[in-house]
Image (cartoon, rainbow, N blue to C red):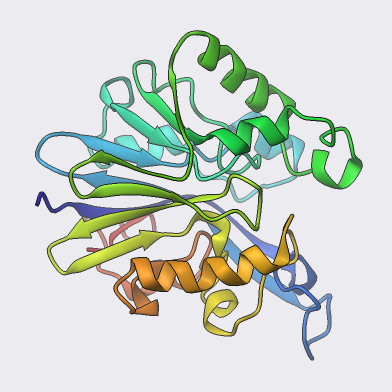
Length: 262
């Protein structure tokens, strides 16, 4: 089986978030205590191709949503690792929240990998509700609809192998079509969790984040990710963990921007 390298690529951070935003119930800590997060996209690299997981958000959305610690667009961050966005064959979107689905335009030839249920939900009857609408950018969803009409969306219903050693798996929970990516590497499987667990403390402490559409599925997703990772919770990579780049080897010349997970 083909094995792959996996990289975390940071394009922004938000270290003035609140605990209540990332822990359901917030536990014993004050709900307004600060919680820092990093914003990542993910690179899966093999000799044949580069696959990108998630597309972050654009400078325009950073300004709109008051994210001043925005360093570069996700596509520009990936270019620092030698990625040519126009040549990427697949961009996997774990879900359609604004910070995961925004910077797609540079990936001009990519198939966009998305769960059926995800686009169905964000174009369905409930999306006008305020609590749901605040998590997306309408233009991101419209872009996906246009891409679907152009035949560029690879819809998945459950699990699918994209290339040997790279599979996607629907979990739901955080959003109805939340999916994760399992990657075979030389050191074993890695699971890129997206927002199925935002932080290490979410899955490690059995403490879901505060945003979800189905809480029992969030808990089931914790267990499923560990199974997909071969039973090793450390091989489940949270989507926004601010300590991640301190714990993995940096890419030469890109300390604090990119690191190799496996």
